[in-house]
Length: 242
Image (tube, rainbow, N blue to C red; front, side, top):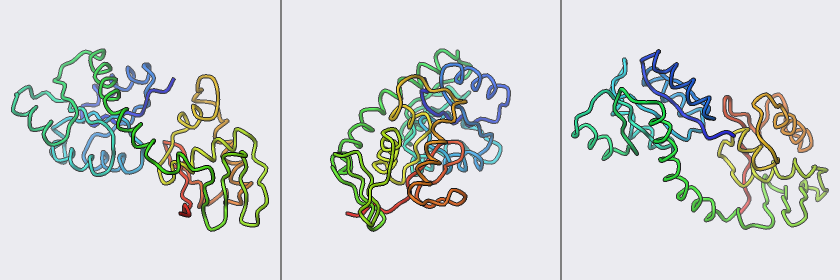
């Protein structure tokens, strides 16, 4: 079971290897950054659940990254630092960090803290989803004429003709449209549309996306409606008609 995507920001390569191996064995996808520049690039290009942040980086202070992460991502931030001063911890928490763990630490504790911040973040995410008007809409119109009819499990093109989507394809299209302009991971799409555990080598999601693109006339080489988000999954980029 995929538990989420973690970005580890630290210039200690040996520690990065240990964190990556442990958390990936525990069910997480781990991305790594050794400096401020790479960390910001990863945040822009990836849908993150948790960020592990060291305070001392070769091209800047990790502390300055906290507000930048907050403006770019809703991921929980855990400061991972060799500094144990109470003042340092308070400053980090007041700047927006969700937790603080002092080096050296046991990997079991790090994993437990990650799960804890994910639990705290979950209620807010659920409330946001429930408040979305698209969650309750029976019909969703987009791109000047397309209609996703959730009562009939049908997708209609601008000419009013039904696009022949399978049930799995419809569920995937529905998930993408409801989360318009938000990247959804392959694992998340799998959980929404399939039963059973996700296999990272299973290309079923990619194959279904390719079929949907073909059926809606989205250019497979340069798609505009369903875009690939490298290292994450897919994102619906159409315009929702309100």
